[in-house]
Length: 147
Image (cartoon, rainbow, N blue to C red; front, top):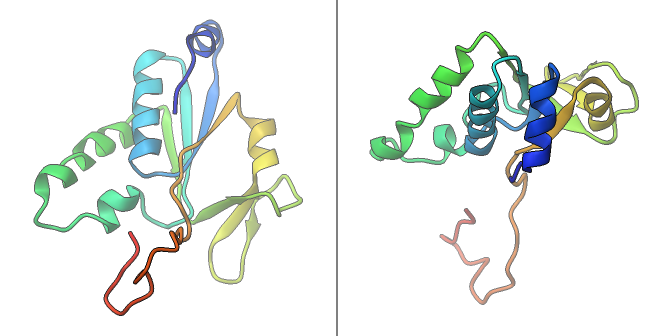
């Protein structure tokens, strides 16, 4: 995710509120650098899961403490008073309202168009929601797990 210098120059002149979709490493590092760059900027992070940190929380083995240590950086970002986290909210195109829809499964949904209309910018920093098949021999054999 590259943020062009022109955009950074524009956010220096005005107070902006940025939405980031996804709370994994890409979302949190984006929030960190935006908040570090401009002291008047506000960041809201929207995450489909109830808890943040994406693969750092769910995809890294507990014995890889050096990789998991980035969570201390993410906690520091989350403590910033210009940062807000909204978990258990799915951002999707299919929602036709500008309000948050509460779903039967306990989660909520908001439309991308709603975020675009409410925020100065929206950063899509989420991971893949499904596997990408590569059509390789043995891809579907027992014990082969997609990452």
